Image (cartoon, rainbow, N blue to C red; front, side, top):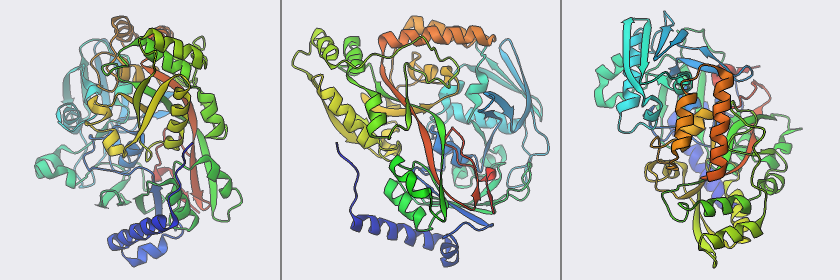
Length: 510
């Protein structure tokens, strides 16, 4: 089993280079103050930072959390209640093919211009039509948008869409006036309605934000935020321990105990929504063969990964959904760990002498991804499968030359959800995204029906039927959910969310 142990010299070099860039950007006074959170400033050391200032060329939870400081959605989710509440929208109504939203009044963008229905229509149109957008699929069935007045928006879909709120979740509203003013350069001038304003950004380094004192929901407690990208787990932990940051995410489980009695740092964790699985794109051989896909399910044992890699800090998934997701089916059971059965199925598929595959993963995105994939490779080897591990930076792994271009055959990934439809529609419904390219008319029919069904119990029953189809065809290997682990300065008052968003507006410093 391999592990990530960068040399001391390399770590020190990277740390010094990062601090040099930090100082050049912010000045020596801020660097000195960043050794501990003050009432004025907080530094978040992020495993994944922004790779672009295009707000829609992203589709990952950590990115959404960063953007939500500056730009805001119409709605948000109360995870405890599993229900939506309004942010820029005050209320909404669903009837037949239409969703009508009443917008919050007296909300202004950072440049002082008012937020109106025109901005909503502009934002959704850009999500749908921008060539770089990775979010267009959320509105593929949207046929019309109307603005009867400045504070009403009516969305019309091809058919009744009971899960339209889920499509709007994490869809952020930008300024039409800014787009008209700056044209093609609008992304260099991020203007939103959020609690923080954009100051500066360096790709792969630092994003600097300052408080929006005119924020419609009241001023936040912390004045300045620095989001600094530190991809290496060891680098984030050591920088936090040295006082060079105040919050870090993706803390390796073996590091958490170091914070228990630390005078400045405490551990925080929450059960996450992210479901980890091995995805198999069925347009690539040998994954076009169901017997191969089933064999891989018999060959992989996530319980061993949880025990030895995450020190028991995880929950095995029995099917395509975890137990905390709407649409979970407690009757579904995962394929038992059986290398002998796996080898038998591979023989029936024509691979009596075994086969070779490449397993792609992103070490800067998923905690201990390299170690996980090494265990998976070891387990597959017992069934006669030789898996070569291919590590890629997340921007490459997730881009249109990788997963989102349909060019990655076999990969380790995680996807958060509170409703099974989110994953079923995006990953497994025909023609929606190229990530897996699975096609099953019976499955598609069930998803079509549940998306029209307003009755929650009927919707769940349909989602459970869809889940049983997936467990027969298995274009994936379900693995586990994990706790989301953080290190936090003891003078920062904050409790983590299950969705990986780290929002400074929810923090205070004592």
